[in-house]
Length: 121
Image (cartoon, rainbow, N blue to C red; front, side, top):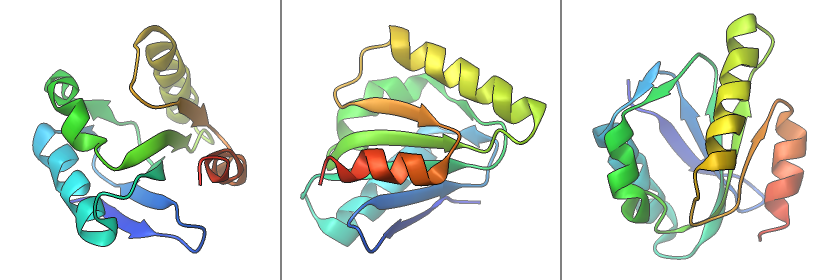
């Protein structure tokens, strides 16, 4: 199933993933959806994961395309389960050691994520 993309009342992209694995095609699909919604205007993005999610390593080859209208990237990981806690820890470690073209932060509290992303509006 494809992720959903919307622009919330604050002007933040909200991207909801329900699949357990993000492929290059899914990543390009959501980038095109954001472009359809807001054009080239850069906005913060909150990615919501409700399950353990993996990424195809090839998505890194498309970072410029995937983030072409994003100025900050927040991940909300529901850590109510052990899988969620592990996912959050893995993602935090990955983004600490992997340079990204925009600020990135991983959250276990959606309201805190939105507050942080508002600073990029």
